[in-house]
Amino acid sequence: MKLRNKIHLYTTVLFVVLLVLINTAVYFSFSRMIFTSELEQTEAEAEQIVATLNENQSGVPIRELLLAYSPINGIVQIVMKDAIGPGAASPDHSSLRERSSVTFYSEEVSRIIDYQGTKHALVSVPIIWTNGEVAALQVTESLKAAEQNLNVLQIVLIVVTLIATIPLFISARFLSNLITRPITSMTSTMQDIRESGRFKQLELPEKSKDELYVMGETFNEMITLLQANYEKQEQFVSNASHELKTPLTVIESYSSLLERRGRHDEALFDESVEAIHSEAVRMKNLTQQFLLLAKHEEYWNVDLTEIKLSTFLQESMRAFEKAYKRRVEVSVEEGLNVLADAQKLKQLLYIFMDNARKYSEKEIQVDAFRNEGRAQIHIIDQGIGMSQEDLERVFERFYRVDKARTRKSGGFGLGLALAEELAQVMDAELLLHSEEKTGTKAIIKLPLSQ
Ligand code: ATP
Ligand code: MG
Image (cartoon, helix red, strand yellow):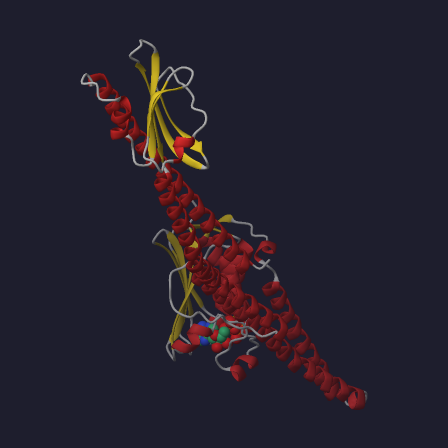
């Protein structure tokens, strides 16, 4: 069964059962109340008659006396142990007159009895008769009127139950629609996505705070995230193939040149081998960067150790100066120790140093000091810098400010993307400040070792 029908059925049945239970309880307590009050009234009448009988000194005939007191729909009788006694009186129309057997009670009795399918209130009070025998004064009264009232009540309650079921049925349908509509629309959107292979958002009618709206909103956020990731992935693959295409084209054209004329032309041979070699190296570097980027954090095998920054920076910068013949000014606060992975920190520094080297010509400055409970390493160059818009995008994979120039300098636009991942696994923070034609400052914030 569909969720919508389930909710509809369950709520309707539940409410109808509740309504029937309530109405039944109302009916039974009401009828009990009515019969009790009728019985009490009959008791009071019986007591009145007994009192009058006791006071009857003037010799009024018993029959007359009883007749004077007999109720409209009932009978007053004196019952002896074996038979109806000397007095029984009732209005002429009372069917109780024809009653064949009457029970004698020696004790006081007051109860509801059934006679000819109608309920009657019977009250029997023992009295001492004139001959000294024990007799019973019985007052029997028909409760037909009360029963009729109760029948009317019964009909009213049944009709009310039936009428109330209609709005109940409608509101239960409305409730089930309200709950299931967003679910249905979500399911159809999901099916649409699956069939068309395109990402789609749910249409959320109006802003509200209910759970269903939150569910729809969460679904949309999830789709946005999936779409962004999917597009990034597509972008990465197309960029990667584009990057590989250039060196492969160079290798292909040089190798066909070699094939045709390489055997006789030594200069061409040298040039081709040189070009093929350099493109192969470039491709190797590129694939190495791809592999690093593709690896998930867990596989990075981080080995955090205490690193003394002064020696660490001095040594790596000496090596850098030698390799690239560039001047690096290092200034490190004494006793500054950080918690990091030495290999990865070196790689991180290299990425920023490599950029500073490529995009500036003057001396590079490296400062390290303690600040706000962390160690900060600043790498400052006085090079070409970049604009605010470029600064926001340089951490994206393959993003390069000037494609032609960076290609000449060997850049893929992957350095900073890799730096971000390296920083993440070491719990480090990266900041980049830059101004066009003035220079760039890269900041690495590292946790101090205790
Ligand atoms: P790769 O590092 O992969 O060899 P790349 O240096 O071009 O290539 P990133 O290090 O990610 O790539 O840098 C992205 C871009 O940001 C660079 O192409 C460059 O345009 C710009 N950039 C980065 N550092 C600097 C800097 N210090 N000064 C000026 N521009 C910079
Ligand atoms: Mg770089």
